[in-house]
Image 1 (cartoon, rainbow, N blue to C red):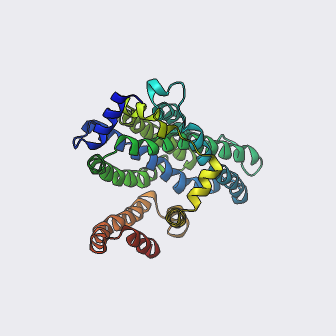
Image 2 (cartoon, rainbow, N blue to C red):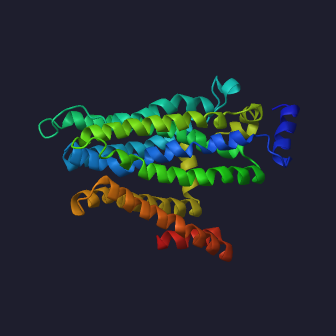
Length: 333
């Protein structure tokens, strides 16, 4: 990095006014909408669709999901390690933005693929459906990882000052809440879209979520562009230092705070999955009600979540200890 670039980078951190426009903050935050919606439809409806609608044996679903879980565990750190370097296109387009552009279309469209199983009798010939499920999940996870890790890595590079991050949170927080609502409620609107034809309804749901997610992903692209200051920083000495993949993993596992966070995040993910997945089974087979009731129950669950936010904010302000609040909230949950 030359002297001019160094001065630009220094001014970026020290100057109180952000160089980013309001649209940049908003556009970047809009990425939460496709990310949350795709995750919600995958977690909430995949098992029910393949077991109840497609009638694939649950043990074969378990087999496909087990293979996918192993792939998912390997895929995330490997892709993160491979793309975290300067390429031939980095100087012109940036290190993160090209990968985001490459990944958004196959990532969003793979949701439609996941819920568009060919017309095959699962009881007579299950293996093509197992293959369809597994390939769909692998495609979805590969491009989801490619997009999400680059968006996640870019944000702290793009919004570097405390002031910028406070401004970003004003856009991010309400959009994230909206993303949770849409992600959990929007897919349910299509469950009974075509009365008597669950398979077609789910296919329409997958297509609708894919299109809506793609539109918001495209709107998020301007906010994920890298300017000259960010690109120049990639070529500085500090940003070109690389650590062996296994050594980096070992160092991360030495951090107690990371291990605790990982445990709590895993437990949180399992709990949410159990609640959301079983809710559709509960309303379908126990209560035997329509999708409208499912929406009401899910809406009540979300309302309880939002009502509790002021309580936790007040508690956090009182104890002034993020770590303690995290542990108390995690154990209470």
